[in-house]
Image (cartoon, rainbow, N blue to C red; front, top):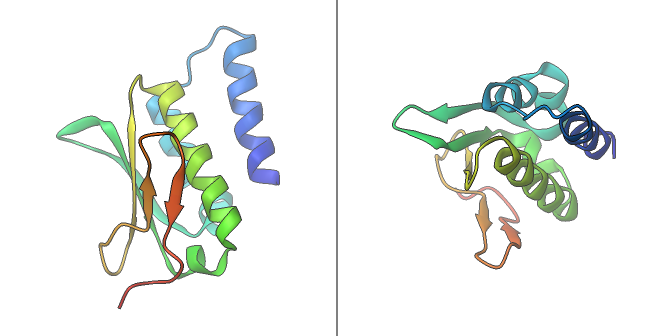
Length: 118
């Protein structure tokens, strides 16, 4: 719930003050210690060869979150990134296996892996 409030506040502040959320602000927020601990993020960054692609690497703590919470987070991350980068794309992978753990659907939905692939 606190994550939702933080994202909503960031988006509200951006729209209320005419400020566009910058990609570096999104990355900094995702890499903040509190966000990383609560969401199971190992690190987040922009791919150097694809400035529109946000790569979020998650650790074992990601899999301890409930499925609904992971789906909600994945949607929040995508929405926030697209606010910062028009037509931005997000990739969420397991930091250990390097496998995707979130699949974004063309219709706007999201599917999360239930457990870590071995």
